[in-house]
Amino acid sequence: MASQTLTIRKPDDWHVHLRDGEMLIRVAGYTARQFARAIVMPNLVPPVTSVEAARDYRKRILEVTPPGFTPLMTCYLTDRTSPDEIARGFSEGVWVAAKLYPAGATTNSASGVTDIRNIYPVLTRMEKIGMVLCVHGEVTDPDVDVFDREVVFIDRVLTRIVSDFPELKVVLEHITTSDAVDFVRSGRVAATVTPQHLVINRNAMFAGGLRPHAYCLPVAKREEHRLAVRRLATSGLPNVFLGTDSAPHERHAKESSCGCAGIFNAPFALESYATVFEEEDALDKLEAFASVNGARFYGLPLNEELVMLERAEVEVPHEIERIVPFHAGETLRWRLLA
Ligand code: NCD
Ligand code: ZN
Image: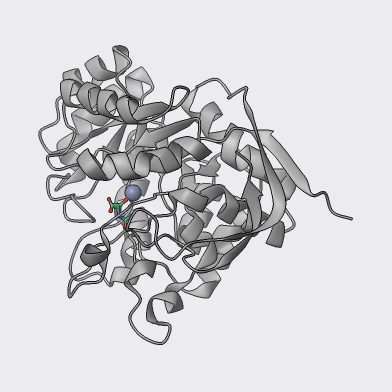
C-alpha cells in the first residue's frame, strides 16, 4: 500500500506576488504557512526599483508574517536601472535577484524594459557579481499571437541573453510551452513551474463560458504543452523548481470586461503540486523540486525544518479572503499538516 504521509524539507516559493497594503495582510500568511522563503516579485505600484524601496517593502512583509518566514526581495528592472544600484542592493543583502519584465507584458509591467539592450550594462554587472536574473519570458509585440509570446521570446531575446552573458544565472519563470521545456533541458537556464501550468490547459479558460479565474500570464497553452511541462517538473532535473506565481486580484478585478491576469494559488499550492507529482508517479521527486533545487541554484542553504503531507482529501473553498483561489470548489488528494 502506498505510504499515507510524505515528509520533506520545508519548501520555498521562488516566485510569488505578495502585493502590498491591505492585500498583503490578507494573503501573505498563506505563503508563509507553506514556504520558508519566497522570492517576492517587485511589480507594485510604483514598482520596487530602489534599494530603499525593497528594504521598506521587506519590512512591511515581515511585520505581517510569522517569525521564520524569509522574504527574498527582487529589483524591478527598467530602462534606467543603474548597475551601481543593482550591485549595492545585492552586496547589502537587500535583494537576491532582479526581475526582467518586458514593458507591457503583464500586470504592472508598464515601467519594464522596452529593449533588452537598455539593460546590457546591468546584465554585465549581474553576471560579474553572480546575481540571478528572473525573466518574464514573453514578447509584447502586438503582431505576435498571445499563445506564441513565450516561444518568440525564447527565439528573439533569451537566446541572445544567454549567448551574450554566458555566466549570467537566468531563471525562465512560469514556463508554459514544450519549447521552453526543450530550452530548459539544454541546461543553460533554470525554470520555475506554477501549479496552474501543470493542471490546466487553455480549454480551462473557455469551459462552458469565459473563466476569468483560469486566466494568468503567460496564458495556459495546449494540452501537449502542459504534458511537456509536467514531465519536466517531475523529472528531478536540478535546474527546475517550484515557483507558484500566486497572483491575487480582487474578485471584481478578475470578473470584469477587462479582467486582470493572475491566479491566487498560495493557500493550497503544495497540495496541488503533490497531487500532480503523485499522478505522475513522481512523489520521490517532489522534495528536489520544492525544497532543494531552487536553494542550490540561488546558492542559499537548504531549510532544516520539515513539513508533512498526509494522504487525505482537501476541499478548496470557493472563496478565500474574498478572492477566488485556484482549484476553487475542487478536492485535492494531499493535505499539508500544520
Ligand atoms: C502577475 C500579477 O498579477 O502580478 N500575473 C500573472 O498572471 N502571473 C504578473 C506576472 O507574473 O505575470
Ligand atoms: Zn508572476
